[in-house]
Amino acid sequence: MIPPMVLRVHITNQRHNIRFWLPLFIIGIPATLLIIVVVLLLLPFALLAALVMLCIGQGKWAAIAGVVLLRGGPRLLAVLCALRGLTVDVDDKNEKVFVSFQ
Image 1: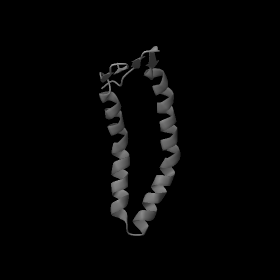
Image 2: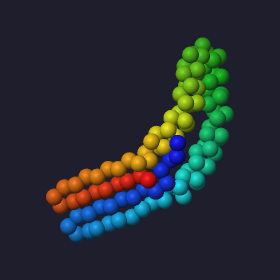
Image 3: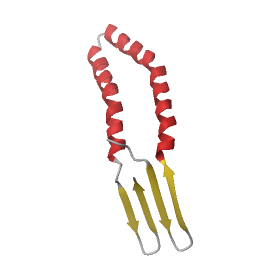
């Protein structure tokens, strides 16, 4: 599983012909570091909330929230990796939009 590295966009209408590509691997590195920092900062609050829920007898909800949080990261990565190869091509009489993840 490799996430997409480049986003290509091509927009054409009667007045404009716009083409650009966006290197996603450059955006991905700082975004990954930011996500790690945010998760590490929020982890004590999540553990405290789970402890409070266990103390008031809502342990089932704490377990469900923990499972969702633990599975959320890998699921998000799987969705991002599934974008590789996605091509969206919309064509009209006057306009054309092409988006491609590579």
